[in-house]
Length: 261
View (cartoon, rainbow, N blue to C red):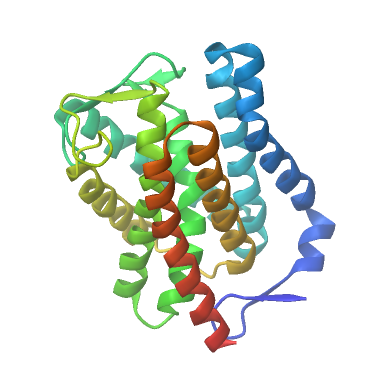
């Protein structure tokens, strides 16, 4: 079985992937870690929250890199990962110290370790979701227009934050100086996400992507975030809006891919 990358003569063999890297085990572990989060908090209280979140994020980052390495090679993948995390840290450091481009906010001490007041988990979070967002954008935009790809990547990444910010604020990971109109999150935050996602994508210029597995990661994140926020975390509003936001992009990507196939 082959995965199309929307680049001429570029395909990735899933059998080779499965034989060389433990992707199925990582998928299973990552999904179980997300499902186990409310159980862990119920049993261990809020004190276990940082550990469980970090563990789940590390699994997802590893899973994403597992699919990128066969497509790009170790060197390009490592260079891309360092570039994404470095730019993400710089943007978050600038944002949390100046208020631009997300609005005035600050990270609490809950997540450790931190560099310059920014938890190291934050750049990892950008790395774990930006490649899946790129895959969605590639399916929608195709390979002809770089600007369209950048724009759709920014939209796909920002759609995830429709879940993320209300959830993380409710958990006490960061706080806004002046709560805003989107379930306590300032609207300017989402303009900042669009700009930051577009900037990182434009600088990185990602190459051919294993779109199917990365889109699957995006889809599982969408589904589990929707269910988690609605049923477990008491955030039905962000759950429904995020469901519509990420879901509409997934549907569009699926339809574009189906037409392309």
